Image (cartoon, rainbow, N blue to C red):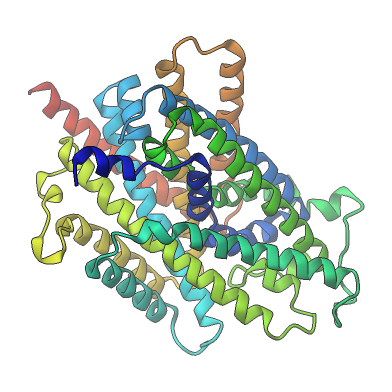
Length: 443
């Protein structure tokens, strides 16, 4: 097969990329992390998700325009370097690597929490270790065709949400026996809507934004589009679909169960239907989340490994991480080993801090992700030629939303440690970047 034909086979249509984007975005952050958001702010979580949807669209639209004008494998890291210099590309790449490791850790803990519902007497760290080992084994066995089933996995995740929406509507219409006398219904005043006050609403923003994490993957894949000018359309369809199903499903959840019933260890959609005669639903729904979450985590592991190889080739990481092992189907084993150490750290922290570790890791992962989104917005001002004043104002609104989500993590004591974790990682990356700048200047 010629190189040109191989390259043409990789080209995909805009709708395929949109579907892949849905698969990369819908994950345990939405299925489980939204419970934390509801606990913090109550029914107003729907407004948190609306703000997050608008902010996410602003970021993606700018990334799509840069990808259409100058498609590059390095995507947002390349644009950061083009806009501000090598230090920006270096720090952006390593920030994304750290956020991806934390996201995998967050998904790992979420999968363990969901599985523990079936086996309550087994420690959380045992399940985390099992899923980590299984994910690594999948990669070692070789899953080059993994992206071929990503569309199918996206359908599973979307179907799980639609299943909840349909069942919830039938239940509210009286078609399913059960229900609770304490069912809150539609909030009629501000106190019922914002049960956590303005601080709770502010703190919930990070979990809403985290549920949209994954758009940067579409930026990395935009180079494979048949028509690069279709990148903005891909984002509109993907984010439009996500915003609609996210908000509708959350609206149904918060009017079906009191705020004090929601628990970070259980999906809000399972909680919403807990008082109905649906013994099958929690098991089927949890199974769907686990299957989808595991596939997302494994795909993210592939992405982290690939990113480190790219960083190594560009001189932004030690060259050893670009080496591949023939015995393991040309896998970059050193890069995989470093990612494995990151997963192991998640298992260890689950052992040491089993009660709050999911909130901590999810918060830190969301903050680091938003730092990269801020880089995307700031880079666009320099990379995109002739950007209009109105577009700069809209981009500034996106930055304002991101700043609100990050600073909101300081509003609640239960999630504040996640902010300090992210700040520590940013500090480490900054120190290394300053050290590397001396090295680059001496070259």
